[in-house]
Length: 203
Ligand SMILES: [Zn+2]
Ligand SMILES: [Zn+2]
Image (cartoon, rainbow, N blue to C red; front, top):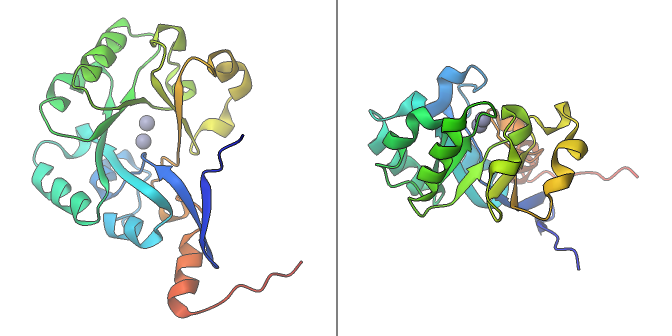
């Protein structure tokens, strides 16, 4: 039986089961985040049942740790971070994140060692968008967690890249949202809900 991970939870809204790759203004330096993409905005969107915030470790740590931690927890979200290769791993495992999203760059042997090291922390480690980082999935052990993300997947020959590995891994679907409208088309629905506007179904 196919498990459906989209739940209709109100007349106006569609709720995803999980989204663990979301950026906010804590990742402002990556150039794609808009100033409105705050943790509060993500909470307002209410687009998934399980939400994790995964801002770029290199962009806000360590000086904003307390602030980040408190804000993510305040909304009941999972506390994640996106780690860009082996260079940040030693620092990242010093902090008590709930999970990691990891860039495992294909041509760098040390990044696969970094992945093992990150896993030794005992928290979920999600291999981020492997088609965008050219991760060699043959080098990732069976049962690893690999992401399909909405931001990049459509740029790639995803069938060719991923089909050989479908049975090898556990998979997660993520938005990799940097802007409210990347979360799903739920913001306008949430606004409609707040205003008491009901959508007219035309066909
Ligand atoms: Zn990424
Ligand atoms: Zn990302």
